[in-house]
Image (cartoon, rainbow, N blue to C red):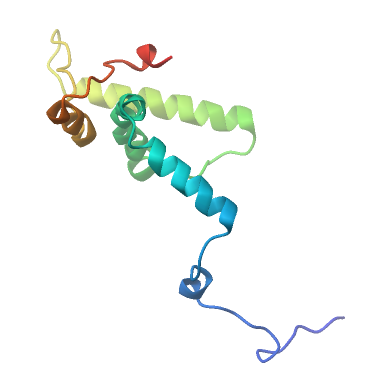
Length: 129
């Protein structure tokens, strides 16, 4: 039976040490390109559409435990996600009196920023294509 190495033979760096230094040149160039792209108005329009859904994704991840699946297999995991989405929608609809439609969602902070800067933003994800 093989023996495990002793503590003096294994070298562990703390997490903060692993992040030190400059990133590789390719990663640095990619970061620069992405940051330059984020300054363009077209990127702001596309992100405004995405920012509207970020709150829902955060709710699924934090309030409903969607980071981990309860079941194995893609079909069962998909079914869990679909049923959770239905439950979230029922929960949201139950907050409103019968017969009344739900009020529109308030704009996100990013969408408010676009409005203040006078950058037109898309109102629907369907218009993003």
